[in-house]
Image (tube, rainbow, N blue to C red; front, side, top):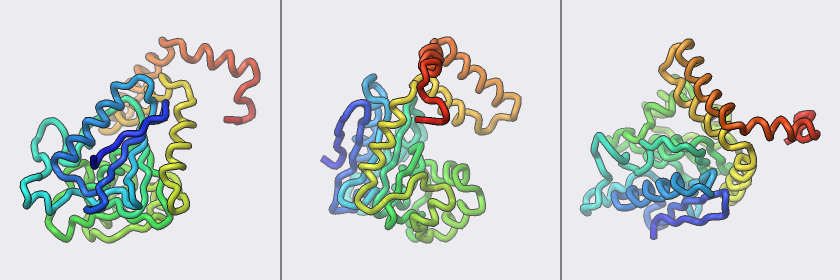
Length: 253
């Protein structure tokens, strides 16, 4: 199966495993990948997901050969994106564990995730520039929001490879790790995030995404609405008790 799921609650790891095509994604695989994330969203014991490409490659994008063989990616306005889950707004975070190539549609999958843990030899790039294949899974939207318009245009117009170090310098990569350790380090980070009070973390995350496109007044109002949901949950009461008992003082995590 090109898409596999391995669960170690509260971490839910989704694996792209199609080594013959460097984890490129055809139409059936995109549907399988989207369904895997739907299962994650519905699993109350799963608090955070890791997306990882097996065999040393994150994802080489859409499987162009499959297009000529009758397994094209889905191209419709509504529903799933061509690469699968890229139009979803999940309530829980996703971390990309990136090794090898994260290019074309694979870059867009990595951009869709909240954070990117990147191995030192990893390569990002809009490699589809060479073949007239558009960024259609959020690449032109998410990339400039993450790294700024000038750097995004550099990648989008030239299609050039971007190293892991450059990605880290730009903010495209969030963590820089040794080769062969991206999944392990991403799952460690996932476990740490899962240890925090979840209602507060999830609402702060959604507020951060929803403020795009709003003016300051609207964004502040929306932030207050999310914050009020957290306060109404009562989650902070236990946190206040923990602090009073000495936990987390002096910046300790």
